[in-house]
Length: 155
Image 1 (tube, rainbow, N blue to C red):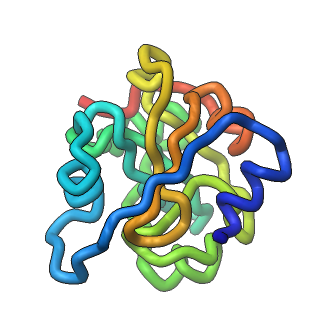
Image 2: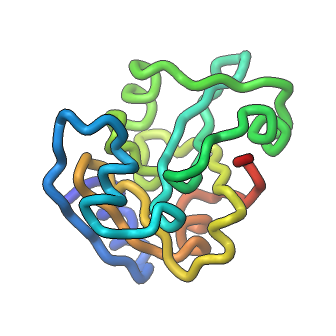
Image 3: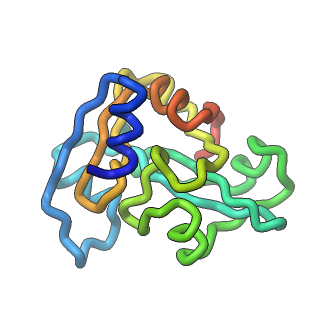
């Protein structure tokens, strides 16, 4: 079990867990999940952590096939500028390591923005808190679990 799975169970949402053999030499954790699970890259979402000028960490959740638009994200959270966060601060704050960062069950729940493309989908996949482990759930349940919001944050 991971904190993400424990959190989803505790709240009682409908979800499924999917596990695959993680390859430590994989270039992209998200693409690896897509390939190993045989899914469309539009329904597997990656979790990225950004930081503001005052060192506040924020979560961006977007399809694996897309790129985060930092300007759009900054605007969505009412900031002038954001940059990608450093690995050490991510691990210390979320309790997860890159490639296994779940938006759910973080040590400190961070403000979360999910790309609006998720609103068109019945179910999406996000990390369940470990490399090689994905949780499938509805975008609205993900919003509820993260207290997040939907915004256009990709190009």
